[in-house]
Length: 51
Image (cartoon, rainbow, N blue to C red; front, side, top):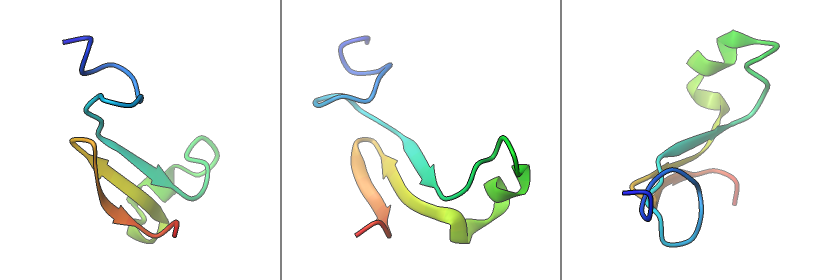
């Protein structure tokens, strides 16, 4: 499966969320839906407010 998973690179399946803010300094940011800038699921963009 390492050819499809394990890193963010072209041709691989990826699930990740990009957020505004730093959860290391403000853990509450993880619960704030307004802080979500980008959601990628199975390699497809599901939400993009970066554009």
